[in-house]
Image (cartoon, rainbow, N blue to C red; front, side):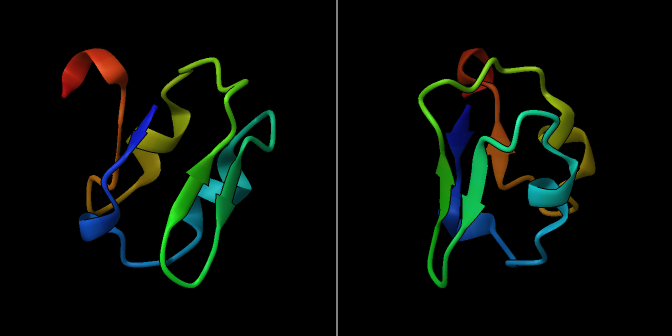
Length: 57
């Protein structure tokens, strides 16, 4: 998972939806745990496209 920090609106939708709790939202970035399995759930819910799967960059 690759966070696109410049696109993030800090709404937190991805945080609550991650089935493994591998996402963390701070004041200025989205942190993705290295154990992320790239399930893609967060990419679907993000209204601003701030998270993309590695092979989609």
